[in-house]
Image (tube, rainbow, N blue to C red):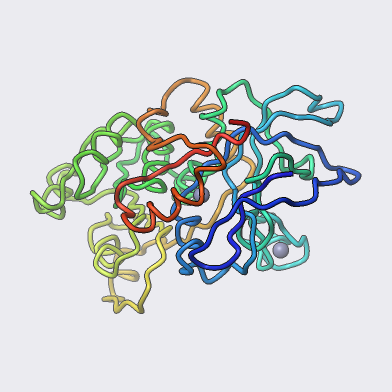
Amino acid sequence: MKAVALVEAGEARIVETRAPQKRPGELLLKVEMVGLCGTDLNSFRGKNPLISYPRILGHEIAATVLEGSTAIPAGMRVTVSPYSSCGTCASCRRQRFNACQGNQTLGVQRDGALAEWIAVPEEKVYPSHLSLKELCLVEPLTVGFHSVARGRVTKDDIVAVFGCGGVGLGAIAGSAFRGARTIAIDLDDTKLDTARAAGATDLIHSGREDFRTRLRELTNGHGPDVIIEAIGLPDTFRAAVEEVAFTGRVVYIGYAKEPIAYETKLFVQKELDVLGSRNALPPDFREVIAMLERGHFPVDRAISAIISMEETPAMLAQWSASPASFTKIIVEVGR
Ligand SMILES: [Zn+2]
Ligand SMILES: [Zn+2]
């Protein structure tokens, strides 16, 4: 079968590879569409420390069941959780499989779904009547939804999300889906417009206005109850702790590339919950699917381009040359 593989950093190719064999407990899926995100771009550019080459890409999956089970029969449309878990590490023993120490994500540490067929364990498969495009968006949105779950967001909270890229947009949609007043902060008008369409109630353009002043204005001087950091810069990491309300929750999803100095008295004085958030759990997948089924997300605005498998190697090179020109690229596998 055909697949798209990174043979090494900077070189993607269409390869011919062996079709998968379904093992006990697995389903055989015909891959319909696969979304590409910043992780794939980093893998292409050799900037993803977790990847090894050669590697078949693909972890944002829309597929049709070819050989199913009683619960998920042939013909159903599905998406897939691309994570694995060892079952024995400290995270797994606490049922927090998303943070498994030995996690292997499809398309990163294991060959992914950018191929004609894949075989995956049944418990990783989520059936739904969503469109194929929507199914591709489930996994990337779960990452933001998980951060909202980590922040224990309720309808009574005011939540601020730093950064409206793919992950931040998921956090905004997740926070809005729980009924919280949701403030989106970014430097890009287009991203802020999409954030509004995803449920943000207030927008702050941090290039044109002082976001710290605006946050206080919007919260009666208290600061947001929850701040979700989805950028990964030292300034925004620190601002989250500085601007969150007393006894608030700070959730970090971004990865900062350097050590950050903090005024640690804020942790103690405000009695903060400072939380990390990584990947997603089954309830996050179910919540995203429920949100999309209600039509609460601007699906078409979130997708920059739809291409064929053959076009993928050239598109990765183009994306790498100008990273800001695309956010989400979808590969139509059967095209
Ligand atoms: Zn992704
Ligand atoms: Zn584990």
